[in-house]
Image 1 (cartoon, protein in one colour):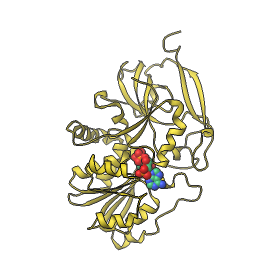
Image 2 (cartoon, rainbow, N blue to C red; image 1 turned 90 degrees about the vertical axis):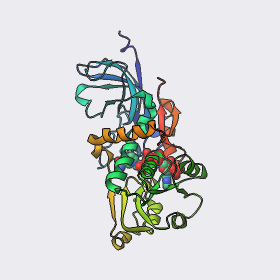
Image 3 (spheres, protein in one colour; image 1 turned 90 degrees about the horizontal axis):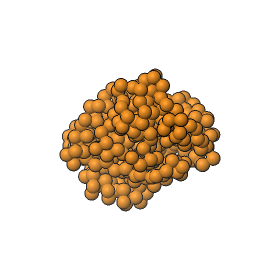
Image 4 (cartoon, protein in one colour; image 1 turned 120 degrees about the vertical axis):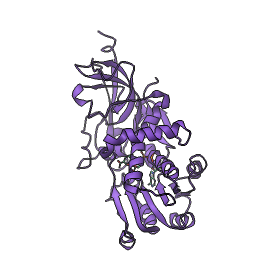
Length: 344
Ligand SMILES: NC(=O)c1ccc[n+]([C@@H]2O[C@H](COP(=O)([O-])OP(=O)(O)OC[C@H]3O[C@@H](n4cnc5c(N)ncnc54)[C@H](OP(=O)(O)O)[C@@H]3O)[C@@H](O)[C@H]2O)c1
């Protein structure tokens, strides 16, 4: 038995589809032996996993931008890890990589799946968890959603909800660097203080403490030119009442609706789009995969120059996956939520 095949892989699998908020019963915990990679394949040891609001959608049956996770399958997750066995010339043992690793300790990636897993080498000196945040999928979402769909111009007012989260922190910081006025919306004083004092947002509205419409009136005196929507629901409706002529609304997500047991609540104030000749457009980050290197290079430069920050909220232990995921839906995560599976 080799050093590799003596290893055991602990995994978290989808056991059943949740109704409302997921519970521990929706998951099963399994083990299986680790196998050597085949020709052209790679074996990656998971270090940290990205916990994403989208995971809730992947647990549902039905058509979306990506197929649902099958019952019994290891839960889908992106992560960062270290190559521990390789038969592929592009990846050497000891390389750090970002890839679809799923919620497990070891990920065997056959040659045929390497492209699909999105695997690429990363520079650990940038901070491993930054590769799940500003330099990873949420950062790409914020960057391309804002730059391609939002098309910000200096002097415009950008509002972003979920401001202290993974996507929100990227959007606000990029918008500031592009010369915009930036107003965040977040839950709680600590998050609002952080985006203003640490990230340099111009203001932040605590939606849990007061009226969002009144906050928008106060902090966006010229109206809202770009709204980057991470939450949907009532907050989207409130922002729609303050948009300017030609405003762009980026529909990135609607976390306030993901655990609904009733139909998703759509915006009642959508006629504001008509009056203001405004547009609302959805974004799926994977459509920009070919251009990730451009965004990564730009944001890595900002991080190195101290012009941007990347804040992660790290929880340890694969076995804590079910409860940790819930932090996203009750706002307990402060920064990008990461599950550390193993220490480097
Ligand atoms: N379209 C794409 O390709 C794509 C890619 C990545 C992410 N997304 C979407 O982007 C959004 C943000 O994702 P993320 O990874 O950056 O998560 P995140 O913002 O780091 O974490 C989720 C945050 O959402 C807020 N929240 C939860 N329930 C809420 C509610 N009912 N009303 C208002 N806010 C609520 C909480 O912050 P507070 O404490 O401030 O409430 C929570 O911390 C999600 O909707 C996600 O699905 C889309």
